[in-house]
Length: 185
Image 1 (spheres, helix red, strand yellow):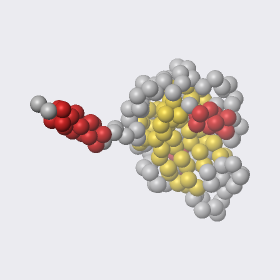
Image 2 (tube, one colour; image 1 turned 90 degrees about the horizontal axis):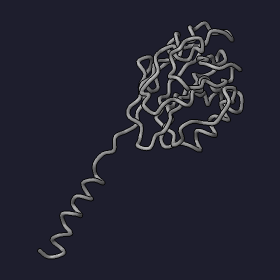
Image 3 (cartoon, rainbow, N blue to C red; image 1 turned 180 degrees about the horizontal axis):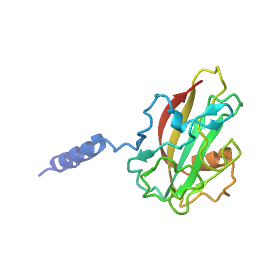
Image 4 (cartoon, one colour; image 1 turned 45 degrees about the vertical axis):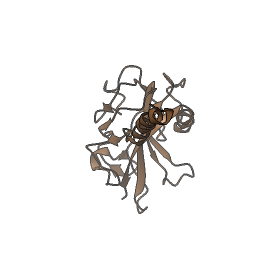
């Protein structure tokens, strides 16, 4: 067999491996789909909003190899603050976590895995704070993101701001899966 003939099977195998579709890291919720409205049960209770302030149920597919911890954030880039609005910030989730049940954002319930941290939202408290855009604004986008991280944990205090957590998430990111819902009133 010539060296050219031996090279062809190796080249073919390499091309097939490169052409194989990678498994996507995806985020899903039974509460809403991408670009759909946020249900009232997930809307904030206060600031003129009368929702149930229940964090949505979330599930995600297998994160990429090398994931050592996970985080979940919900962020409104349309808030009229000049810097957006952090609605939920959860980090130090174990890497084998594949979802969070509805209501996990209530700090009074034991629905998060041990070691997970819910830090301060822009409402000034830890835990989930649902959408409540100003009356009359066009519907805001609520970007739900699960972050696959290359670190075992983020060395942050439980009262760290969303911006501080976001900075650390971006520095340790391997991959992100997002879902964007909308809400207006």
